[in-house]
Length: 52
Image 1 (cartoon, helix red, strand yellow):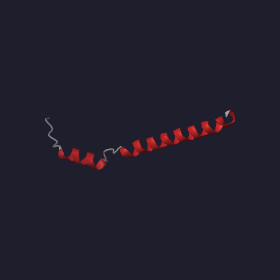
Image 2: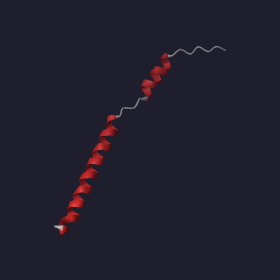
Image 3: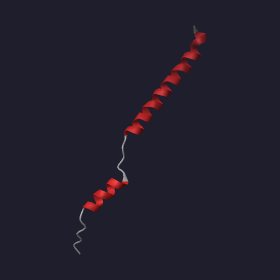
Image 4: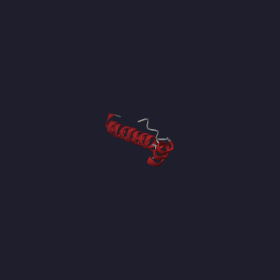
């Protein structure tokens, strides 16, 4: 029935919005950046041999 169309559009909008939010949250929390401690270790391990 055409009278029920707005309810179905609303449920589709809510469903796609929730899927988008869940997808973005999963992508955000699955990424592990390098911490400054690991960068400091890698920098301190390299010798500083200046040629001048």
